[in-house]
Image 1 (cartoon, rainbow, N blue to C red):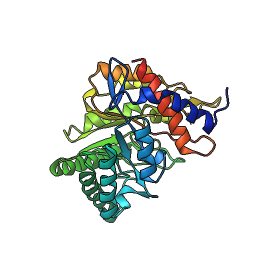
Image 2 (cartoon, rainbow, N blue to C red):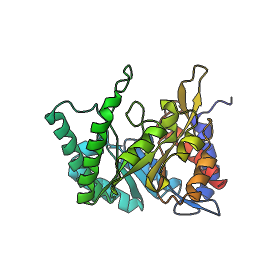
Image 3 (cartoon, one colour):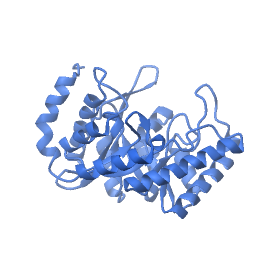
Image 4 (tube, helix red, strand yellow):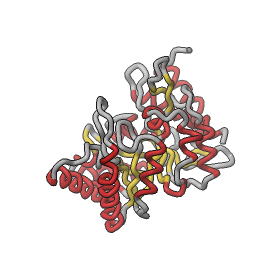
Amino acid sequence: MRQVTRRSVLGAGAALLPFAREGSAASSGRHDFRLAVTTDEIDDDLGVALQFLRRHGLRHCEIRRIWGRYNTSQPMERIREARSMLDDAGIRLAILDTGFFKVPVPESPDKLQAQWDLLDHAFERADALGTDLIRTFAFTYRRNETPDPDNYPRIYDLVAQSAERAGRAGFRLAVENVNPSYVERSSQSANLLQAVQSPALGLTWDPNNAARAGDASPFPDGYAGLDKRRIWHVHVRDYRRSADGEVVWCGVGDGEFDHVGQLRALVRDGYSGSVSLETHYTIDGSKAAASERSVLGLLRAVAQV
């Protein structure tokens, strides 16, 4: 395989910039996608990340960590500073990422209360940053453990409680399937949506995470079992499976995931949310170079939809 370097990626980026700037999202001539990038997958410095987005004509972003800390740990002065920077750059926040319920099932009232406090912090920051959509999870287990199926009733109950709190406060929660978690595969995502029928709860669909968790075919098979109306956010990256079956992250278009097919299915099913790059790998140690390569790969996929 051809060696990828930061210089070659940036050179390709310059060649495709006119295409990237055609619209407020990414236009293929037939469909527009509201493309975004998780900012700390470019740089922890929000200003640097926003420059990257503008260079590619992208008008949405996803915020997880900024300036070296999770957004929910940043004081509100810095959050208001971030909102001002977004406004000045003409970029909107698609979803606010949190670590809410990305913990083992709480064993004590104090541990559960800490999660409710975190959710309250997320509400405050999402409001300040201009979004009603918040990324959450559905509890984790240790990698050397097997998840206890007896935990699911309590997990569903707690997720339902979180959705009720969000709905009352005017927000929506989009649970991400992630490994290792009680909701990591497509089937577990479908089960959660079936169990918690709240208008304030949907899914952050990450087919690559589903593959890492063991789904042989997150698309089209895994996707087929999901309630499409409740997919509110989509993560993209790419992966290859090693000889022993391990999933290794790579640039969009460099792996085995069918991005064109997934994007076409989203259009067919009336999806109106964001498609957000969560890069998860580096080139020569550079997150920005890897994100650049993946953005270009994603734009090429969009052009085929």
